[in-house]
Structures are given as structure tokens and as C-alpha cells.
Image 1 (cartoon, rainbow, N blue to C red):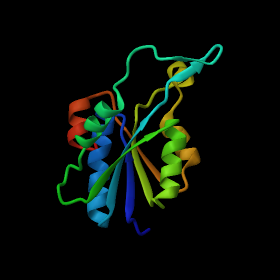
Image 2: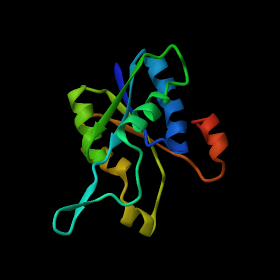
Image 3: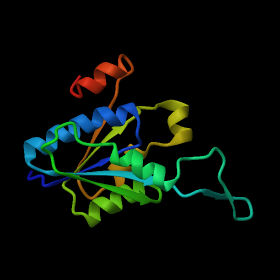
Length: 153
């Protein structure tokens, strides 16, 4: 499989940081470009169509700054950033199709049971919808710091 473009969706979590290290390594080895993306979710409509804003989320400018701080762990890997809006799984799959990405590398929180049922799994939805292979990285509970240092652990 020839890999020229890898999409790395980030939610700014530790698991995402560990997956970035893996995405960077794969991009380096393949000579691929890394597209680092964050999906900003629009406010949820409820009831009679009013918008519910609940707990304040970072604004678009803050998200842009946070996204720009996410860079490959190898400075020789070419990359670009994208801040897009929508349902995360749908937006990531659409971006992969539009960009003709060869691979998506993303972290998963590894939720199970009721938590997964209630919160859903963006990674699982991306796997189902993506037009290209998806490599998911599950951070283990035993050590967040060591997993961030060694993505193959």
C-alpha cells in the first residue's frame, strides 16, 4: 500500500498525543504528508429549536491555537492543519474522501459497556464510514505517560 497522505484527527487528549507519535512515525517511514485535523462540533439544538450551549467550549480562535500546537513528533514530516465543523465521524470520513487520504490514524479511549453506549465511539463510527483504512490506537490504563512515550507499548 502506497501511503501519501495520512489524516490524524485530534481531540487534544493524551490518547491522541500517543496516536500522533504513531502517525508521525508512519508518515516518516512512508514519506507521507500528515493532515492534522480537529472537528469543532456545532451547538446542539433541543426542544423547540433553541440552541443549548451548556458548559462553555473553547471558541474557534482558541481551537485554532490549540490545533496549531499539535505538530508531528518528527520535524522532518510535512504537515498541515485543518479545523472543520460538524459531526466528528462524518466530518473526518468526508475529509478523508475529499483529500483522497490513504490512511487515518486516530486514538480511541477504549470505552466499554454503558459508557460506550451512552457516549458512542467516534473511532468506531470513523472505521465504519471512512473510504480508506483506519488505524486506531488504544491507550492502555496502566500508564498514560509511558504510552505517550512509546506508541507500540
